[in-house]
Length: 478
RNA sequence: CGGGGCGUGGCGCAGUAGGUAGCGCGCGUCGUUCGGGACGACGAGGUCGGAGGUUCGAGUCCUCUCGCCCCGACCA
Image 1: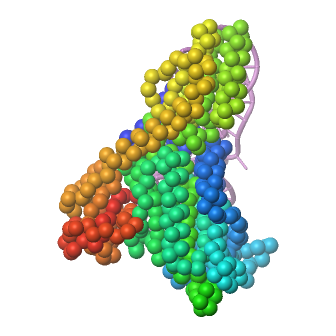
Image 2 (image 1 turned 135 degrees about the vertical axis):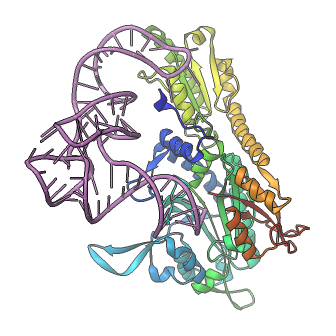
Image 3 (image 1 turned 120 degrees about the horizontal axis):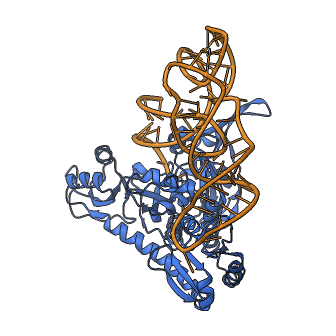
C-alpha cells in the first residue's frame, strides 16, 4: 500500500507539504499559472479564521466595505514607492467586450490606491475620522514562484484601511491591529508568533513602518503571518486627501493598512503537521470530532450506529463540529488513517464491545494513548478535551520555536547555524542597509523583525563591527 | 527571468528497435470481510497537451507551439 504513504517531513518538507495539502483535500493547483482551487476542507479552515478575525475587527470598531477589483493604471501609479514595489507583480486587463481598452486596468495587488482615491471624497474634516474600514476579498500578484496557499498568484485576504486625524492615533491603530493578528495566530491557529517592526528594506512599499507577526514552520523556516502598516501621510499626499483640523489648518490624513491572508491555512499545515498528515487546531478544524463506528455484521451495525448517532447529536448540541463516518465502503483502519491525514483533533471509536460496556474509545490527534470512557463522560468532557488539544498544539509549536531561536555570538556561528539548523537568530546590527544586504547575500537569511521600540543592543554589529543600533532577528523565510 | 523536469484512462506511472496502448491505485456490480490503510471475481473508462511534417504505419522520429511543476532571484 505504498502509494498511500506520505513522504516524511524530514525527507523533504516542501514535498511533504504539497502532498498533505492535496491528499487531505485542502486544495490543488488551478488551471491558470500559480492559481489554486480551494476544496471545502481547506476553505472551511479559512472561514473559521475569517470569523475569528472579523469578530475582533467589529469589537475594535471596524466596519466592512467593498472596493473594486479592477483599478485604472493611472490611479495605481500615483504613489512612487508603491508603484515601484508593486509594478513587477501587477496583472493587467487589456481587453474588454472584445475591444482593446483605452486604458489598461490593473487587477488589484492591494487596495490602498482605489481606497485613498475614494477617501479624498469622504474626508473633509477631522470630524470625518477615524475611518475604520476593512475589506474581505481577493487580490492578484504575479509572483515568479508560487506555492499552494503560501504564495499563489491569487489569494484571499482581508485588508483594513483606516484614516486618522493624527499620527499618534494612526500609529496606535497599526499596533492595535497587529495585536489582533497576534491573538488570532496564537489563540486560534495555535501558531506562536513574534510581533516586530520591519527594517527599511523589508517594508511595505509606501509605508513608514511595517509591523509583522512572524512564525516558525516545522522545517525551521520563518513565515510572515500578517502585517500592519503605519502609512504616515504618504497615500494622503499621493491622492490629495486633506482635512481641516480643529485649529482650522489644512492637513494630510494619516493612514494605516493591515492584511491577513489565506496563506495562514498553509501556515497552519506547516506549523503543526506531522508524518501522519495534518494536525488542525480545534478552533479552525472543519470537523472537530469524528465518530468511527465498528461492526462486523448488519446485526452489529444497527445498535452501534444507533448509539453513534446519539453521541453525534449530543455533541452537535454543544456546538461541536462532529461527523459520524458511517460509510460502508471503508473499514475502520482506513478511516482512522484518513481522518488523521485530514487533521481531525479528536476521534471516537465505537464497536460492539463498547456498546456492551456503555463506553467509547477516544483518541486525540496530538498523541497519547487511546482512552476508554463512559459515553456520558466522553460527551460531557468533549469541549475541555478540544481545548486541551488546542493548547497542546500551541505548546508544541512554542517549544519548537524556543528550541530554534538563538542568540548570535558571532557572525560565523550565525551563518553556519542558519544554514544547518534554520530557526530565528537574534543579535546586534548596525542599522545600515548595505550591511543588511551583505548579510542576506552571505546567509540567504533576512531580517524578519526588529523590536517595535528600538532597543540598544549593547554591542557591535555582528558583521561590520560598527556600533549596534538595533536588535535584529534573522531567519530564512518562505 | 535563469536552471531543471513533466504533459499517456479520475490520480500516479510504464511504454523498450516506429506496427495500432498497458500497470498500480481509484471507480462500478457481486461475494467474503470489518478493533489501525482488507480480499476475490467480473466490469466501465484513453482524440497519448496542440498543430504541422516524415512514413505503408507515429505515444515513439523531426519542426513549431501551448501549458504545468520543481529549484533560485521577487513577495502575504
